Length: 160
Length: 389
Image 1 (cartoon, helix red, strand yellow):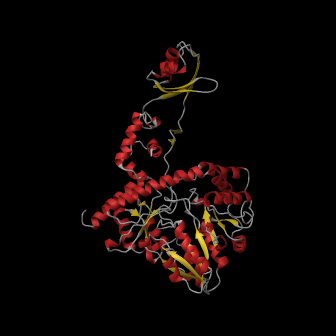
Image 2: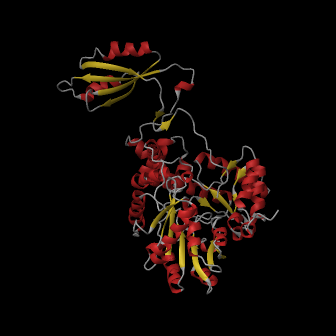
Image 3: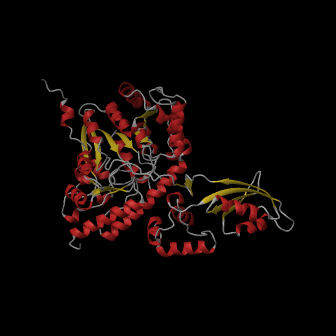
């Protein structure tokens, strides 16, 4: 049941527990318990909203930063990651295989704000060797959802 | 001027669904639960394969029976999913949708005066195709009490010395009924005993919500008596690609191929290339869509119960067939009033045969959001009929 619950709410976290139970053919109590358990086990880590900021009047700049670090004795990647992700500007941090170590997503109001964060907070960190900042120009698809334009039902109204 | 028309074709009434379509088209901003096709787009890897074939300039005819590669994949698929073996050279042909396969199977098999058994309610084209093939359609009226399955009694009742073919339309459009293995076995025994043939339209074969679909062709002694029809429209959301296929004993297929060769030439090449990818890499897509339909099916059944709309539980296709007899209206009246008063389009059961009277076909090939909105309106309509509104 977990997998099915997750498949539905990953796409629609606002669905009523009642509706979810009907869709899955389970009792409301069972579904509610399962969700509570998954929240406790930190399988479900939050319920977020996918926003297309381009359609608002808010200015927002998102950057992806490649970060190379030297893990130090007694302080593996996890510790360094923690020092980075604690900043509220940081949206996401992933440890990567390949040419660099971390991908860091930063959100700021202006490019200057992002640049400042990189030059004043991120780069000076002891373990950080180098950074490469890439600004996001346009989001086409996010979290499995195409955000560029909504689709319409173009089927004929009645077909055999 | 002489009458330019054929008496046969003039005598065939236009599809009942067509009539209702015309009424709906005039209704602006109506929301519909009336479609007979998936709400998903064709999965991208399939579309991409079609595009690639165009880029490569594969804009030629294929052989009459279809691309060799596709015929092989069809046979692999039938072996893998339905446990039935066909020879890609000689027992399989690719058609323009399942519809063409129905037509040419009948034309290849029917002699004047042969009776063809057509269970109803069912897809609109069987009866006209039998007539056009020069056969005599004999209707078997299925009943809700049997969950719209074909039973031994119902079948035996209509068999005469002239009977030659049974059309087996399961999983069923419009009722959503399925026939399970044991139920098919009963039918198969009669078919063999009475020396009949089956045209089995299994276009919804991937969309069942109980056990996996069984084809009657997989039952002992039935392959040589069966034309198995399937296609890509419903399972892979490929209705517009117009691609289906038929599998049959070589002796039948050879004649079907002859009609296809003269009337059609070959199925669309682009669609055939795309379909190869559907069969090779599409199992996950089918699984995802099936689960999604199943969830909506449960939602509909639950909501019907809440609003007091009686409906037997369908386990196939993407239709429900609720019973509206208690409202004392014909299907046509109910559907027309629902459209005029609440702007919801559904299809009257009578579009699928006279015995569909008292029922509606309501499709769940819609997003949950659309279903919710439409069901809310149907609820309001029912309340008003019951004097509660």
